[in-house]
Length: 296
Image (tube, rainbow, N blue to C red):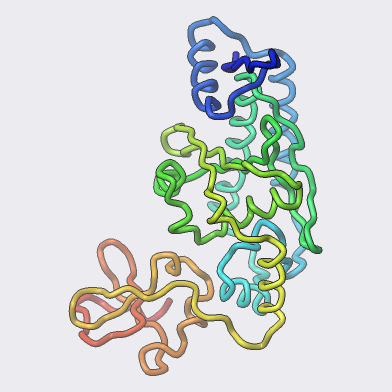
């Protein structure tokens, strides 16, 4: 079972820093027959999977843009576009499946947390702060925890403590808002690498966490304004001849065409076909020697 530390008071206390170690030990013990999954855990995981499937397969009414804790940390300009140009297009089948197996993996991780002896409470508890609602994933041993399934690239940012340097989805602001709504501190991310099965935890530094009420006020004020916020990310030099491409975090944004419509002297983004994929140029000084894509 989970690693236990005996304090001077004689009260048993589970050391949160051993969470990954405890999970890996339980998995090893399972493979060696030293530990068994209880029927209670199996039943609970089965119910969680059924609920995830019900939620995933139930069509959701398009209600336009809603500001929630899950998106409060996104770049302001992107939120501004999302509010004014809400999409009524259904998500792609591949993205739908991605959401499903992400939720299933997160339920699996929480089952392993319970198996390892740590206490999981407040799963999917609804919270509200200054009129903005959200649901925390859970608390583990009393600390707010956001469970994430991540690509190998994204996992590295959690594992190397570098998320604060590149957080385009606003995960740190999301976690911080959950904590401040609950009146707790010491929250962290529990992350599984979807490609390798590796696990890690990441606790952001306090100075990287925004003051949630101030953030909410700033976001709501900006979204109500007709003035478009500044661009989310700076452009990046492409080569040494003056060309500028959009930031990698903008490549998959559905608003990039509208966002950069004034680039290239009002002609908008120019897109060129490279072996590694399309490149979106905000400024073209030197014509690339590859095919240009006009219909995108």
